[in-house]
Image 1 (tube, rainbow, N blue to C red):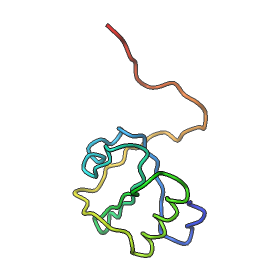
Image 2: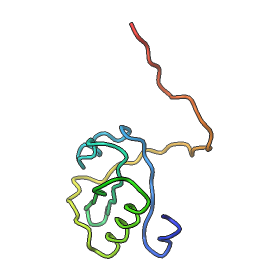
Image 3: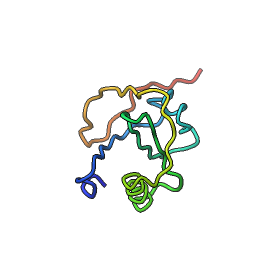
Length: 101
């Protein structure tokens, strides 16, 4: 999708569900994953893909945003994005410990 939209001001970010819970909750994303959300910090607006998560639906969603045909919602605050190390493409162990008593 990034290659197909090189001429447009689109930046992509992947985030694991639950890592930004306050933002997810404020946008109503707790309904299920995966979700695709577009955020315009300048306009303080956002839009969420309604429907199944597929390449075709994501492409249609992005094209409708760029054409100004996608419904937008007010963004309450600018999301704070955490800095993390780049993924090396390899499998890794979870960074949490589960224990049972």
